[in-house]
Image 1 (cartoon, rainbow, N blue to C red):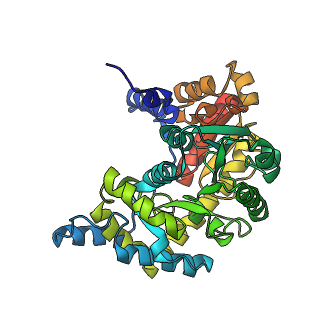
Image 2: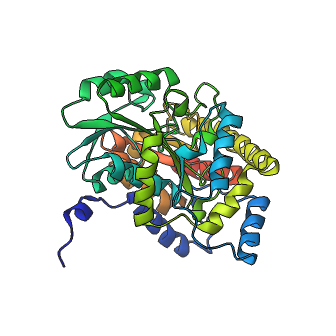
Image 3: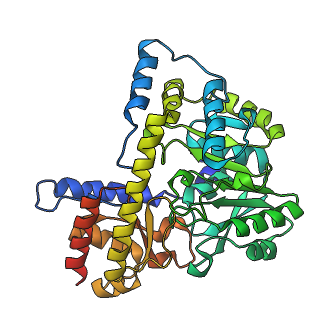
Length: 394
């Protein structure tokens, strides 16, 4: 069977390949004294809070499961609009909000609406792998620009200016970022956007971890800079609804009908049950629970990052959001006699029964020297994992 070139351009999602290997090793170790500790997948251990689950059950009982507008339930778009006003002091009208089938659908819609064949999108290296594949699926080219600790693993306006060429269409950023948990300084983001505007380009910002910011300096939405910025967000991370596949997109007003037309044709509408459930995310009781969880994620970070540094798994930039630790593993590789983070990840799974994610997925700028830990697991698991790593690496 002849496979389309666009499908062949999509690389394997190595995070999931490693996850499958970890699951296989875990099955073998299920009855051992050291069952696998999974620190490889970026999924909160918290699930949807009570009011959200109750709202879903109520929608099922009452038969509210028919199609909604392609842009989502009007009531949900209004709730999201009110949340921007309440949390960030921003006026984001509901007419600019498109509810989507997860943040992945939001990114796909934005790329299909804005990228022509041959267009180039600038992105930081490292960055979340699926983002560059959304660009590729829209017949564009993701150009990854190397970043390091000095730049907080984020692009700078100077880099964007220097890299901009005839085919460049815009930038795709993430703040806070996966895999590093670092955000872009608001002043630098403003400068980046000015460069993009000068070239009549597009600034697209993935903000799915914005709710999980721990530093007020970085905890503001890019939408505060300009209504022309396009923001992607999600109910998966802060709102603990990963499997419900619900997200949203904030676009300039003239782009909303274009995105709506694409959504109508690609998936008709997001999950109706998930949308009715998500209405309860914005109840005071639910928001209080989310803030309690945010404090818990911060406490995990504050314990685990120093523990990794003590083990020689140096985290060069303290994550200011999300639930990841991007650790340089050069010293650990030398101790275990392995070549890079890919080999180290399998060594840790097999010898310490700790599953982590190698840097291969996230780019090519020194990513072989890094592994990503997820701190979305509970503190007892993080402490147990640190002890196993200490025993292995001492």
